[in-house]
Image (cartoon, rainbow, N blue to C red):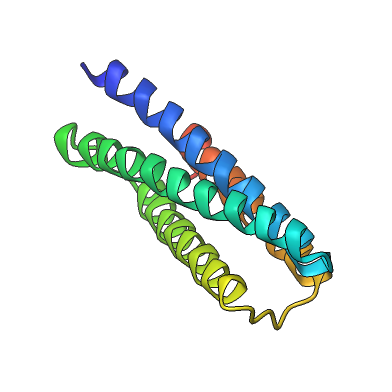
Length: 137
């Protein structure tokens, strides 16, 4: 049973992060867009992607919780991983907050800022995978 849960956890994590990789790219385009029709289309894309990504995050997190508590996984690496997972959840919520600002017509950030913001989930996922595979402590 452990391997099935782990496999589905990985699938949902990969899917969740795919959304976190793409959503800020839409924000880059929204920050640059001057055409109202194109902005409306991009907002619709961002809204649907955020909703879908949120639905993918829930089973990813629940399966991870099941792995942690149900199979008594321990180690210092796990504490570091959980801290990074909390940062990923915070990043996800920040994406939702940014989306609400775009929907309200309030954008206080440049497309360059969103390009840097887009790199955060790459760093988080890289560090999480290293912790899980290498278990350095």
